[in-house]
View 1: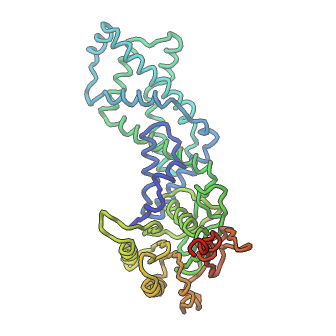
View 2: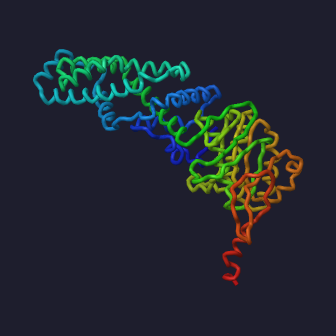
View 3: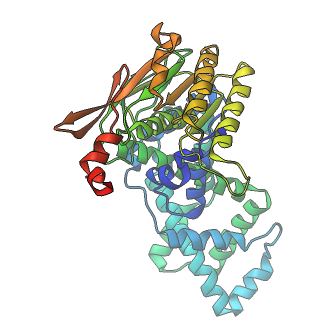
Amino acid sequence: MTNISDLHIEDEIVPLFDFTYNLFSGQAVRELITEPLGSKSAILFRQHVLKGFIGNRELLKDYSYSRFNLSDIYDFFETFSAGSFLGEHLRWKLIFSEKLRHQKRGKLIMLILLFNKIHSTYISKIDTKLFPEEYAGELRRINAFFIDFNLEHYESIFHKKKKIRVRHIVELMKIIAERVTNGQVASFWKRWFLFEAYLSISNGIIRHGFIFPTFEETNFSIEGLYHPLVKNPVKNDLVVSRNVILLTGPNMSGKSTLLKAVSLCVYLGHTGLAVPASNARMPFFSTISVAINLTDSIISGYSHFMSEIITLKNVLTEAADSSKCFAVFDELFRGTNIEDALEISTATLKGLVKFNSSLFLISTHLHQLKDMEEIKKGKIATCFIECELNDNTPEFTYKLKDGWSDLKLGRILFEKEGLNKMLE
């Protein structure tokens, strides 16, 4: 189960990695980022692929081309269908039709120049030893596809004679038609768009200074943690010693942002990508659930509280099946009255402790929970976002500290803004 809509992956996170030159490669980027991988081995494989691109950074840093030319070439290939090559009939049509000859020649010259640039400048020079063998084989197949077109030969003809003749057009059209018929063209586009998606993501990783997490059986620690969309972020360390962590702190102190940052590290790590931190270790989680912005649902008829109940039930169902769950609840049960919230929050926290292979991060404003035996005995870890009062003015440090915050800013801000006097 993956419940990560509150992280806004497609709208906010994908753009951090998408530097592609066409819609197809951009879609491949989205597909890589919007679906976590199903095993630790798959994660490590993708990490290895991305590290291979990063290792080839010096070669690939200036990779570029005209997106309009690529679009034209793609559409040109789409005009071919299996068995569509006309052979001698095509040659005569080209001889007697200047318009057709001009059209085909223009497309093929564009293809030769673009493909030869990509192949000779980048693809043929990639150090495939930096990649896992399975993906190195994919790169060799991309390289072989370009080689089959004899690109240097046709480009030299074009530069010498400033055009390519009818027989050259027929030769190239035959090569394309054969590869459309045997499926090589479709396979090539798929490989190339994935190649560009990996390259784009690796550029994003380098640009933002993200790091690859390591996956261990039980350890969970993130150093230098931050949310990549926050300008000049305060970086924090989170070292997990218990499977239930209760987070406190006044409003506006940054609890939700911290929970999003931790969740984002876990999620991106499980897609095989690097994460916004200086160091990260985590187990493989089969379930990732992030509940930060739950609201009433008009369509389903669910209230905010019922949405919380269903989300928690889904997580518990997964955890009961011996799955390793990572779950975040921001101000759990804020959708009901304080008496109910306190009672069911206590029951929830006591129950979650028993799922010791999972990890639960929960923020709360219920200060009464501090008196729970599980907290006093250290079975539930507590931490808070620091906020200091200076002459009754809150100063937010956004630093994560061990312990509990009893600071309540509501009454202070109410008074500071003069609302008491206005209401008198």
